[in-house]
Each structure stands twice: as C-alpha cells, then as structure tokens.
Image: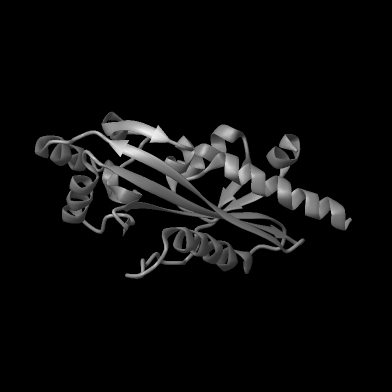
Amino acid sequence: MIKNLIGRKIILASGSPRRAIIFKKLGLNFSIVKSSIKEKIPESTKPDSFVTNMALKKVKNISKKIDNGLIVGADTVVVINGLILGKPKDISEAKRMLYLLSGNIHKVYTGIALFFKPENILKTDFEVTEVEFKKMDKIEIEEYIESKEPMDKAGAYGIQGIGSLFIKKVNGCFFNVMGFPISKFYDLYKQAQKEIVGAT
C-alpha cells in the first residue's frame, strides 16, 4: 500500500507551503494546483463541518481540470472558546488571536478530502488536536508578529517554526496542527484503495 501511495499521481489542491513540505517529506509524487475557493467562516457553524466542507469544495473545484489522479484538499482552523479562527487578515487581527491563545488551550481542526479520478471515489474526514499555549507577554507577541510567520496561518501561529517556542503541550496529531493529518490521510487512502480493488 505504501508503494502504491508513493507511486500515485497526486494533485494537491492547496497553496500551503506546510502541506507541500509534508508531501515532500513523504516522498509523494505530487503537483500543486491551487483552488479558487475563498475561505469565509460563517458566524454560526461547527468547525468539523466547516473544514470538511471546505476541503471538499477545493477538490471539486480542481476536479474539473483533472482527468486522472488523486486530488487532495485540506482546510485548517483554530477553535478557542467556541470561536473559529482562520488566517489573520491583518496585524491587528493576528495580535488579537495571539492574545486569545496565550496561556490557554485551543483545538486545531483540519478537514481533508480525497477524490480519485477516473474512479470517482470520494473520501472525507477531519482530525482534531488539542494545543496548550504558554503565556506570551506583549513584547513576545509583537516580536512574533514582526517575524511575519503568523500572517498566513490559521490562528496566527506555526507550530513548525518560531511558534513552537510558545507551545507547552500537544494532545493528538502534531501534523494536524501543521495543517495536514498524515495518519488520517493514509487511513482514507487505504479505504479508497480497497474499494478500487474490489471494483476491478
């Protein structure tokens, strides 16, 4: 199954550098085709449904351009006290997010979608990881924002970069916090492969 995955033509429907890094580390044969889907978080929505639906929309958007291959989509948000945080729109929003996370526990949700063509098999799921932040002082928050690392990340931090300095504890999948739950992805891949083999 691992050889099957590594040899498969994969289209990553995401412009996230973190997901590309993960795919490279896995040795996957992939190309990037960014979807045109824009993230807009409704005021009243469940985070698991939101990230799963966003991932699904991304693969469906790309599927119109692809005849053969595995299209993979993903979407990540941070949730604290019921509030869903996407990527900060500006510096002031990044600062607000970091003050919310500072000294508190939050959850990271990532939805993933796999669409196999020409088999037209679709698999979706989501992963949740709990993250505990250290208390950050005003200077630390300002200096972290000055690094520009927070600006393109859900919740305004990156666990794989400078943001790791402020992570006290992770309960669950580390790669989910980075933006792509590898183990969950592999589980869905295996499920789909069983269906594909069973249909032949």
